[in-house]
Length: 71
Image 1 (cartoon, rainbow, N blue to C red):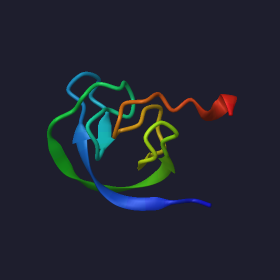
Image 2 (cartoon, rainbow, N blue to C red):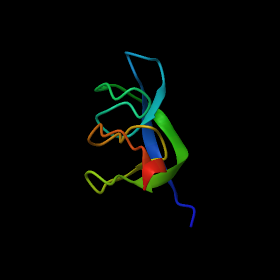
Image 3 (tube, helix red, strand yellow):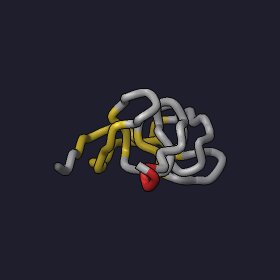
Image 4 (tube, rainbow, N blue to C red):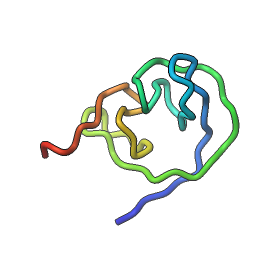
């Protein structure tokens, strides 16, 4: 089942990636601060904190690395 949601996104000051909502960059795991607009993203649930976050390498809520290949 594909999930999508419209969420605010930010720009990571560390790696420059567009980051959907949350406190942490979904590409490098660094804490982010400033809002830049809104987009629609595919989402997954984080196995660490249970938050629905973008389908990316790191959870944007808790910063956990979402390496689901070993599950």
